[in-house]
Image (cartoon, rainbow, N blue to C red; front, side, top):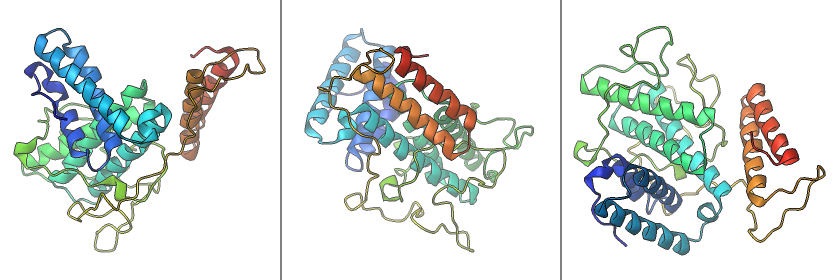
Length: 314
């Protein structure tokens, strides 16, 4: 099924649709959520003009056909889908971050950072982004813009995060805008490396620090003495085989939509959606604990406890 031409009014969602097309065969789940995000944002931009309304209807029909035709729990279960998208986005981000810290700057690193930023954007279909994901999103987009600008001007980018007190990136701090032109087909960008071939890592979010060294011992951040990456993080030019790639298995249990949650010990009756929200808070807390961030873990566990005991979400 093909979509009609994108109306000019919806140019802002063009690159999310392009990312979806790049992942149709590589990872249909990523393609689905990229198009869902494009639909939601496109309707906020213009849902009244005839050409935009026709495009939205066609895109909705497309998503419905995918939902019925793809047998994947990540598409039919929001919790599993969120974990899948977070894992995938983080692996694209970590690949670009490892290349950046190793000083290997090229258009594919720009593309990978930029794609990671867009994938973090799409996670808003599951609700408000948590602080770690939002920081990674801003950092990835800033890094894409910064490296792109340096390469365009014939300058050598500075690896890793910048000094918060300095102006090593021309006065632009992470998350700032420097007029980055979004990469398109005319610029010769190749799709980012296939993260499905990477070794599955934790679902936690890496938060860039002020140091150029990676003190978090992130997965796949090993290099050989000559600077080439080792392990499963292959250079962008390494052929990828999406057919034989192993995708990370979902880490969350699915919910049966016919299941009726019992009344808890506090006498509050919770529905399945509230239990799913509590699971998200616990997942965020678990992520924080892996990085010894006790305050974030306590905050999310407190939210989960309040929701389970009172039925109210803070």
